[in-house]
Length: 140
Image 1 (spheres, helix red, strand yellow):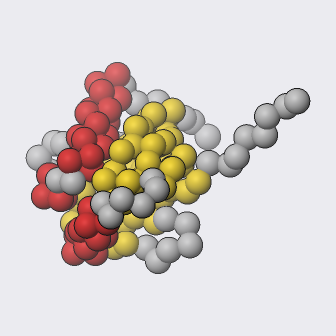
Image 2 (tube, one colour):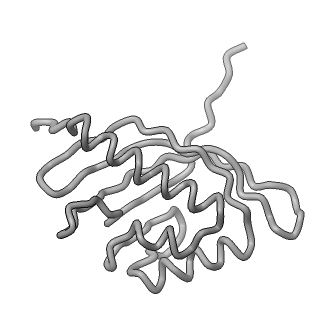
């Protein structure tokens, strides 16, 4: 299988899109965040039903922002391009801080996302999955 590593231009474009997404999450900017998704986008989290399409994704984020302040930092580990599709693999860590003041929910997760080139020329989130990173045991 040939691996099609993304050009530096595409890598920077992906970095920008992901930065916009995580900044939008931190601000609770629902409308700004929604501009990053295709209308038929799908998010798949472990143990959850898929979140499919703009309406469900909007409700997912509306519920999240009503409950938590999102404080996450992404790290990209791979960006691969094939035609109009760009596959992104990375990790995200940080916390979801309950608005009600309960203790923060610490997060350390992996993600794989597929972006699709739009008619406008820009990339938009099309498909994505995420899950918890395995706990690393420390050697004594």
